[in-house]
Length: 466
Image (tube, rainbow, N blue to C red):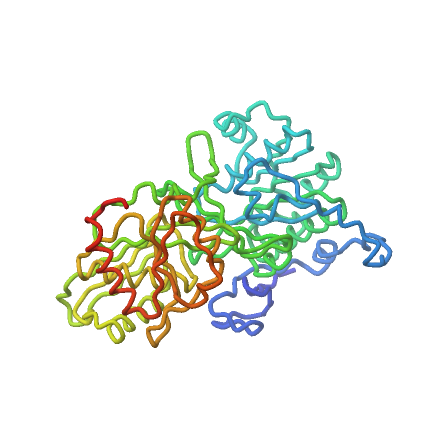
């Protein structure tokens, strides 16, 4: 029998007999991928589901919530992003660029869990068992008791899971798994969807926590059908690449905790090392005595993080001045530059402006507005701020400086790192008691903030500590 060709949407899983530029199911462009449909007789067993778990309906008040306690992975930054650790019976998906350290991190997690007496199975579809052993030796986990299985046939993996009954399992990666009774190739929409469904059913019925590694597309999204991210409980993204020293771990979905937490890691010869004091690490190489640098205290979930915001304003020789932004929303920076020109009187129409968030962080909170404005004003006037000055505040279109949340935590972090002066919004400061050793410079408008910049620069020598 001649096999029929189907086109399956990688975003929503919609199947179509012909190719369209736009998916009829979700209206996404260029997401239909060609796949071969299995014959009807062979397709039925592949898609057949078990009759169910046989569980009875339970009253909500009688369910034991202690069963969902978090198990520490031994890596504090990983636990922070997960909300305290891995939950029993959860399905976790971690994605990132090639070489960013996904497999290394999960191998370290698996090795630590095995050291605590947990039954751990590491399934690899990309490497041999010998390669996993060599990496484990490099990480100092070569004598770990965790089980390693080099297999990518989903039926065989399911059989080994049932035989060994692990408490934790790692599958590296979900795009290499395939069902032998399905005609499509590994990594196709149908194979990824069916393989993930098998692992999800196993995790929910046995209580085994399953961690999946996912490939990413050139746009940075996890490859495969969008339904994959809907099926799992936690979706993590590793940011950074092999050229950077630090890696950032964020959660885009977390059923057991916040999605606003940030984990900072350093890639070393011995594996991924958690960086617990992120503020000191990100400010360690900050330049001294140079204009255009302002320290901002942002909030990554419940953690305050100090970052160095850098700006460079230089005379433009183009008809349209350049605006280059790294680590922030470019449209937001363009708005702030317009406010500086209109409300603070800065002449930026003939200046190329470059903005950079040092350390590779991405800032999306409005509290960084005031620091950006002061960095641009510092570079334009070539006035250097004292090293102990930090700034935070949201800037509106009228030039007003609005208050920001979590001021107590931000100021406490500034005091801990020795920043004795903080330029901040004037509103709502009456109920705020600054920490000892921190002097506040409240401002109501961005023009007052720029004036405070010049005042501070005259009080302190360039680059001097106060």
